[in-house]
Amino acid sequence: RSGVFLAEAPLYRLFRRAGFEPVRKSLVMRVELAGREPRPPVPGSGFYIAKRTENTWLDRVFRGRELWDHELVRTDRRIMSRAIFGYMEGESRREGRAIFSVFGVNTPADMQGRGYAGVNISRMMAHVRALGGEVMELHVYADNEPALALYRGLGFKPAAGPLLLLHRSGR
Image (cartoon, rainbow, N blue to C red; front, side, top):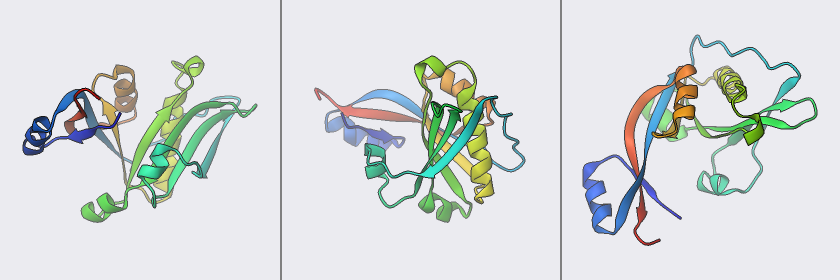
């Protein structure tokens, strides 16, 4: 299923006339990286950071951009939390600041609720700051309360939105 995120009323009306229906709301959240300290590490774990070499839909959509995996892993190499991030060249140039975006956060179901995603994201923010990043941003569904609480706890604040996700009717 494909869709489009819209924030502007004229475009919304145009897409509605073309048969698109609103499905879900999304928020854009940002955090300033200066002065942020990462959360303490999880005992028995480490971090893995590497340029993505996969060929998923995300990698195809952002073709030409460097995307990175940031993983919190146990000593047996099992992933406890993974986040994907990348440098936002166009946005950075427009705003005159180094902006990175979080493109996805995943924690296996049996690892959720233990704070692993928060540790992973806070450590990723420290890595991005070391790369010269000044701001991180992400999109989150407005009804995803656990994710909203996590991001707010890490200092993210709404920067834009809500955006509406639209899908073509009957598809």
